[in-house]
Amino acid sequence: MKRSQWYLVLIASIFCSMAYAQERITLADGSRLSVYIVKPAQTLSEPSPLVILMGGGPGNASISRDTSIWLGGGFAERGWMVAVPVSPNNRAFRGDENNRKVEQLITELQKRDEIANGKVLLAGISNGGMSALEIARRNPANYMGVAAVPALATSVVDNRVLAGFPVYLRIGGADQLGWAERFDETAEALTEAGVDLDAAILDSAPHMFRMNWESLEPWLEKVSE
Image (cartoon, rainbow, N blue to C red; front, side):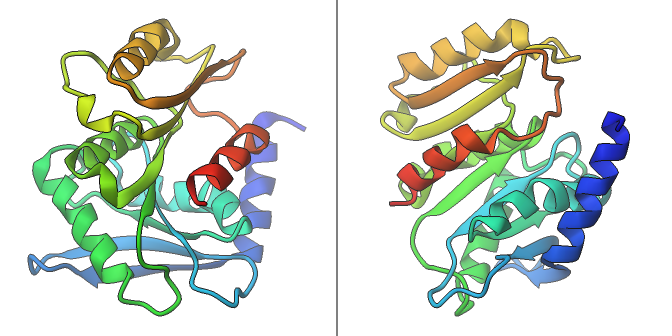
């Protein structure tokens, strides 16, 4: 089966098995944010932990919808409540204004009985991964960690506020955008800041890659304890 055919089959199977919905949520600043919600695959006796998952590129509706299905579905299969916000201005969730919208979204979602209070997981793909790191830097005590698949970081940004903070980073070895060539720079910037970093290059993987749950799942269990 070709990669494109496998991808379509995967999306269809996940879509059919998950409780999936699009919502418009009013934030504290009065704005409304479109969000794709994927509920856990099984009904749980306790509120579910929340992951804010941000798509790549501009974070528009199409990208966010696809992200909620193929990657959000994987989190939902493992008991997470998944929220994939749509960027209000096609700038992913980079920058102070968009960072604040994610913080406000978390506040609104945690008012729901089915969602656990306390720390939240941030995750993102490409631009979404870098958005996740930006948001975590604002107040790392609010978050379990960041799963950036992939993301970049540099020493130009002060990452020292993330000392001891868990970050899971993966970059494809055959990344079409050349991100693999910046893996060492990214890992060094985070390590020198004292980040609790789990980082690796995935051999022959492109910019967007199939998630390796065999390594991500133990990391998730560790940070959610």
